Image 1 (cartoon, rainbow, N blue to C red):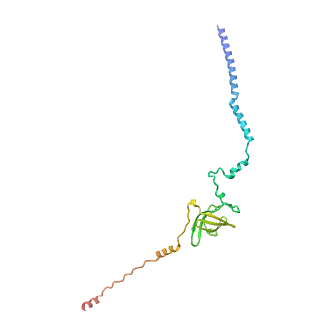
Image 2 (cartoon, rainbow, N blue to C red; image 1 turned 90 degrees about the vertical axis):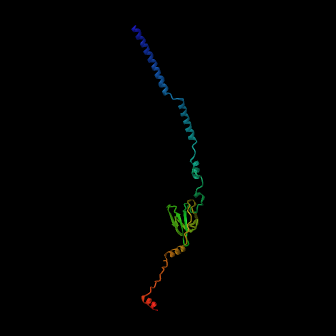
Image 3 (cartoon, rainbow, N blue to C red; image 1 turned 90 degrees about the horizontal axis):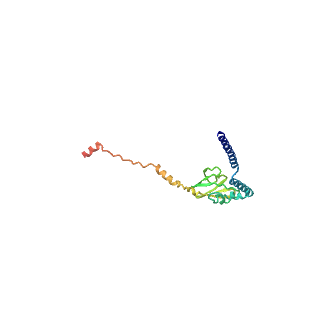
Length: 203
């Protein structure tokens, strides 16, 4: 009886070992074998890379984008493009903010394009190489060599032309304030003397 049990157990152990060995080989083979989807994806990526390398665009085709500034949101011509470029190629102009018109002289509030500072300028003053020739209510005429350049008042800033009042009225008002008011003098009341009163009573 014991021998029969021993033989049966040995046979079962051998069968289990054989099955386990086969199962181990099957599992390792399935892990090492790549899937069909990954193989297809690899082939597609290689084909795309090869096609893309064959059809690379030239750099010259992108120059039109930078020259026409197509990525600017407004896509409108800039102020420098609308202006006529002078002969000397100067495109950076001063900006006019305000004008003060007086009887004797006039002043223009202009921003220097080089220093970005706003200062008052008069006639025959220099602004970044430009000579102030004439100051009007809404514009200023500049000279750059033989050329005349006109800069207008910036309407978007809401700054208007200042016209101070004439100085004659102010002087008259000041003179009126400075002249003292006339002092009223009271005439002293003459009191009667006692001698005069006795003469009047006797008479």
